[in-house]
Length: 417
Image (cartoon, rainbow, N blue to C red):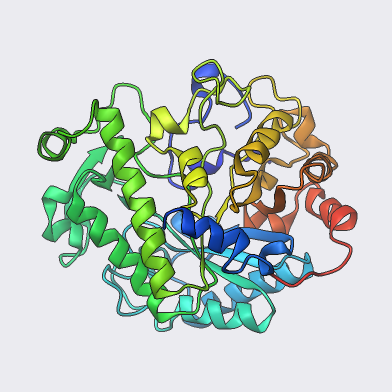
């Protein structure tokens, strides 16, 4: 069996290292809250988590259109698996594409539940997930995608009341998909409201974003934010600086608002693991990745850590030890140095989905590869845990890599935080 990359699984973004031909693919006060003040002592527990992706039915529900009982049973089954694997947290995708998996939201019900956008599934997935996770001693982090609207470019396919249809000037088509425009202040305000609606209703333990801000670059494609830049970019030296400023603003404002609305909840982001290559910037990592978040996604992930706008960061270090252009053994130390002294917790995103006896990469065919990652990371006290992509592989464990991790590193359960 061959696994495709996470970003294709999560709606088809371009390959992360395409340019190299590689095969592996609140202000400072918030940092004080995260590591030295609010929750500081509690966050000392090792974080052991898995992502549960709902977009395109990657992990859950197993397919669209299942009845409410089947959907609920599948969800609680994944929570039971997390407990059995001695994990202590799950990161559940509840707003995969400008939609919602809770009732009364500012956007329509997700199509990945019933098969029809806007159709009520007959139950409350997020509310149930929070209650059932907590009953099992698990943290529940609500995973939102800020700007993705649809995995197609036809607004007419959205329900008539969709905010993207009511505000067509908010939307930019790009590379076969629709996105909210991050350069519009009204868009940034709206997407925060859409996410905080869930945070205000449910006792989630965290707000989690993945690596989609501005879309991954696609050859021959143009993200048309000309009008927004003309109206709002005058204070910046370049469009790239303006775009990074837009993303910074979203992160900072969300951090501040989350601290007010649900101060016990933590704010975490799981970016593509390469901020910049050292050949681009001496502060960058010793990698030669074809994508750099700072330059290509307009996401200054290092700044968010240094400014303390987030409580934890989960770089997607989806390469094996010894990878020629993005070596796990070089990426993890770089992130450890980056978070040192900031109060921001570092959890490493692990590519369980690559672990397969049929992999074209020898390292991923070895069931011990992932366990070696945890052994290596244990040499860096800044690494406070690991997150596995994704729940489907935590259940199936095709080559026994997850079982090996549990046997080698998780001899007993540990409570979250």
